Image 1 (tube, helix red, strand yellow):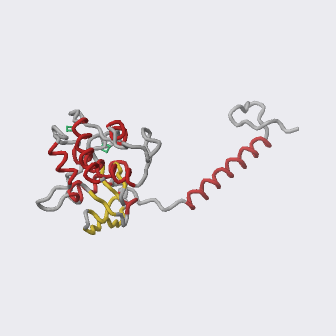
Image 2 (cartoon, rainbow, N blue to C red):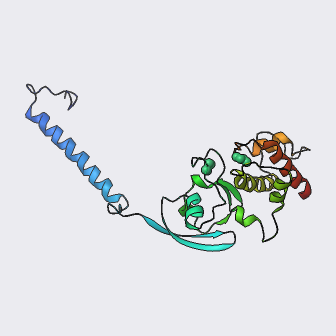
Image 3 (tube, rainbow, N blue to C red):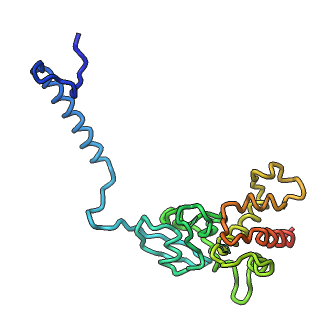
Length: 220
Ligand code: FES
Ligand code: FES
């Protein structure tokens, strides 16, 4: 019976010609497989070149076509390429919610997603919620209830709040309310849970809940 082949434990004094042939054949097979995999992989950009892609986004009702480095986040696209600096960069790691925008009706952390993943999408930022001379009801409620102090988290908080009310209307459950037909649904605990991805270092949470509650009441 053949002894097991272990190329790392060959004793140079006892190695046979047959052993060497087996090792050679094994290495050649591995090399051939790696060459095959390399050939099947998509072509790599030449060293020093940046992979780019054309992307069309519908931002706040306007069609915007850009050629972007494919690694560009949606957040950087909005802030650096479209100069919509209302959307804030807090942590850039999906932990604070300052970068929240609404994409095709759902709130997302724009720092955690690449712009090329949203070709053709409808994007709403804080700039797109208001009309000239007229605040969105959620913006007006934040002002009325002092839902901010420094204001850095506020664009994300407001975009998130608008999307939260749409989620409740659409019957999206939360960890707080398993039964969406139960009343009252909009308890402070419910809103705090749904807004838990948006951090406010100034601690304006109770005022934010008051603002959302007022808008939700006005809608129902
Ligand atoms: Fe995106 Fe903090 S900047 S979650
Ligand atoms: Fe300052 Fe929220 S208002 S971080």
